[in-house]
Length: 430
Figure 1: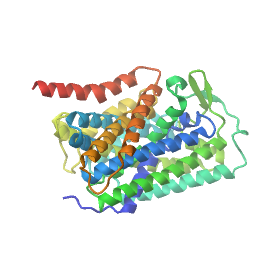
Figure 2 (figure 1 turned 135 degrees about the vertical axis):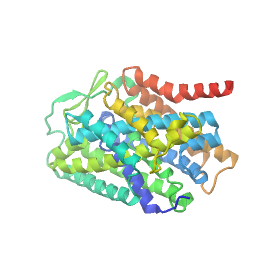
Figure 3 (figure 1 turned 120 degrees about the vertical axis):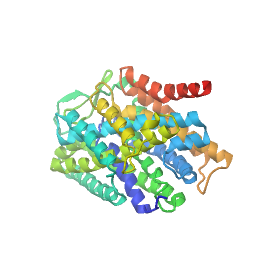
Figure 4 (figure 1 turned 90 degrees about the horizontal axis):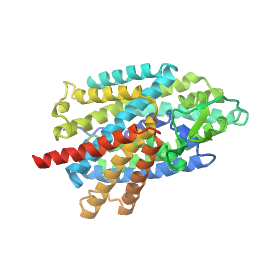
């Protein structure tokens, strides 16, 4: 039986670290800042509110089902096998894309100009470490979160202390790769992109078997972690806006200052007069740690799906370390392929898939609440309903805004809807 060793503070640290590692260093800042002055702050607040509603629904489910698998397990328990399969497929796809995003971000900060090569090596290394059972401890995750928060605080202070501002900056503009302005309402695209950077709070819910007093600790940890991260993102957004020339929208494309899209916080450090290596170290620790956690969590969800027959049962195999190394290996291969793709915003592709996952979680929470199957935590149905509606709308906006090409939408529909429906039909025939 798993020992409950993780305290409330450690759970908060894990949540904060996972969220910061997921998004603050990524190119999500391009669509967020593109919506214009002050609107970008509203986009972050709205994304945080959606994340908060989703977190409460997830916490209610986690209090009743303190097991691994997240919304895959919750969906199966409350809505049936098909809904659980949809949630699991959305989670695995979304988090696989998140691994690719993290690896690409790591490559852009560590070795600009060779991001894809570094990203490939980072994914392989993360898989090798996880396969051997070498993952972050709660103490390590909290320590990384503290270091990253300190670095971000220094960036914000330096940005407001410098005499330079956006009006003084001279920059050459390049096409963002790719953020089509016509992909959907710009403000909602910004909200969807910002949501990507909050998605790490789900890591807290997956601690149901390890955290002390999960019914009380999980909701509190989620609220505390989200509150901290919202404040951090607002501060970073204000700092970026102060030193970054206005991001220009020209026709159906967004033009950004040269060097901004690949490594926005290195751009901020340079503009604020801080040594860029501070951001590089913080990004390496934060994103690298988040990659390990995301790959481990995704691998375990895939393992749970394999045990139920929703994935090939061979993927349920665990090595001597207990890690599902085959499932994680498949995820690593898919992430490496995504690292080398061009023509789509992986941030928005991941957000669309993860938002679908949370739509199922919110629906499961509504059914659970109305059926009286909750444990100690009971969230008002209106909160879960709001989370369901917002997640569904933002998922559509995100996949439309991800690219002018057709393939992200087709892949999302095929994996998240087509695969589970086909599997359910095959089961009925049998």
